[in-house]
Image 1 (tube, helix red, strand yellow):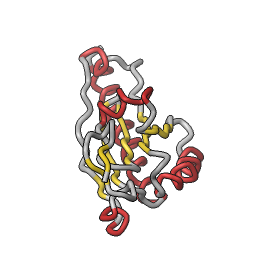
Image 2: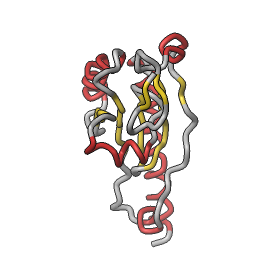
Image 3: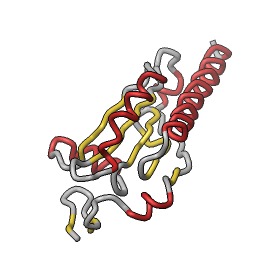
Image 4: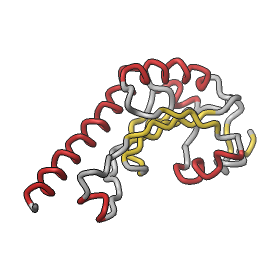
Length: 153
């Protein structure tokens, strides 16, 4: 067992949680994105969905992440996808902000705030369903915002 410099806790010898590898992935419930008043009332303000996956070179499950990201990129071309190596010092701020609970660990953001998380390596279908939910939520919020702003003018 070793202590990881960014995660700040002890990791097993395999680097990934054996429990997650055996039991599948854990989907976290959504949290409401934080909005500033300027963001919520401006029809020109685009709500951005972003897909961040925290990985590590030593993680055997993380080696399958690039193929998953390529498939997702093809299915959602307007969404930025990023694989973030937790061991690179340049990624320390993102690791600190989103505090991955193991690797791989995916954070789908809506307006830079965590919207959904996936612990472990999920199937393409499960990951795509969570991503589709984030995109649909963004679209509903934008449609509602535009109706409210349009009615007030």
